[in-house]
Image (cartoon, rainbow, N blue to C red; front, top):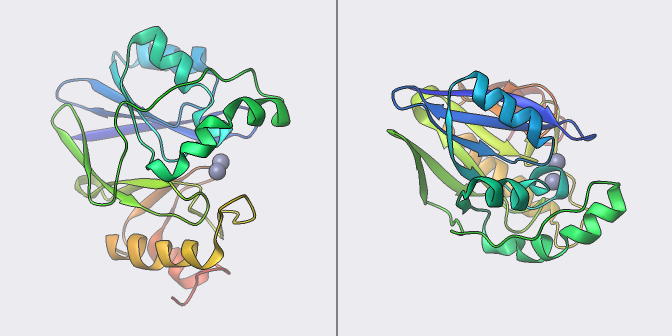
Length: 212
Ligand SMILES: [Zn+2]
Ligand SMILES: [Zn+2]
């Protein structure tokens, strides 16, 4: 069984998620943007062994704590897609611009591509490349529990910004309709910010992609 706990971190209230295999208590953290002590306290409270860092994309609120966490615990960094290399290179400027603590530089251990899988304990998740918000954005789909961790691709009632460098509005729409909707209307998604929703609900009522 795959389980998860979402913990908002940083001033941006970014939804960092701990995901773990119930059988082995091995865990991955998705998007450790900051507040590492909070995350480590929860990991200890839950009795988990943190083994990997997974990244949806390299904006500071999602990736800012990655370098420090990976170095402290000797963890592999998995993702995002290589399209986000320039965002990783720009983390120091992102830190300064948004008043974050200085982000430690890192190099992903493994880049992700569309159709890849990631594994934690006995559990496997599917990777979809969903560009538009950033060019290297990926999402993690856990069909065994009908959940998708979608970062800043889609929100309840909204979708990701596309006014950043290399953002692309049509590409984001295509990512949502061609790569998220096929996961099924019943799928609950955990967005990068704000409450969970289902793809079915967004297909009905989201002002950006409703009716698609
Ligand atoms: Zn973002
Ligand atoms: Zn974000």
